[in-house]
Length: 203
Image (cartoon, rainbow, N blue to C red; front, side, top):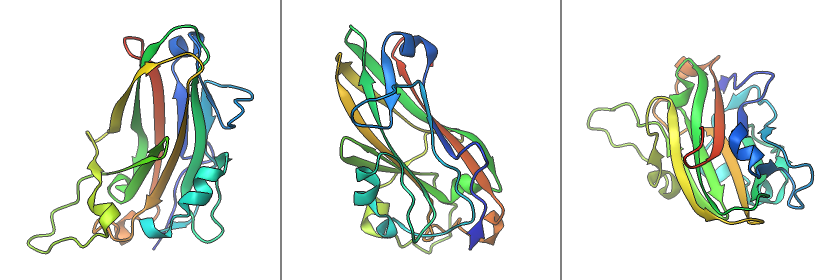
């Protein structure tokens, strides 16, 4: 199965809202926190084929700053750092939103978020397949479901103190074991945004 997966602008955008950025919440694609920014963007991925979790090179992904390009498979993979460069301890909320999708690509993907080494996989609930059980490997059995048609996940970081740094890796792929990965998604695309904000501010 070959599909189109994104546009020139990139498949996945990480951003901090303006108010939080002014208060010192910033992103960087380097551990040394050089050139902190309010916005980072993955490279676009084209012609991606379906694959599965066990094919991901997660050690290489997490050891590569910014975009990781797998020589064998096409998927979105990006590692970055969230830091508090301000002077106050705050609570951070972050979510991943589907900005645009075409030909039901959201039904076939998996979104993996690795926060300081802790993995969580997210998926849209499968289309019912009658009485036939869906056979997933163990990591894929542990997925959390999208919160809605447009919101994939939402989490909170409590007591985010000044000079604290959290490492994130995000990975998005087309899951070949998903029953919604069919010929119908050929030519599909999806764009996602991960937004960070100080709780009580403007998301």
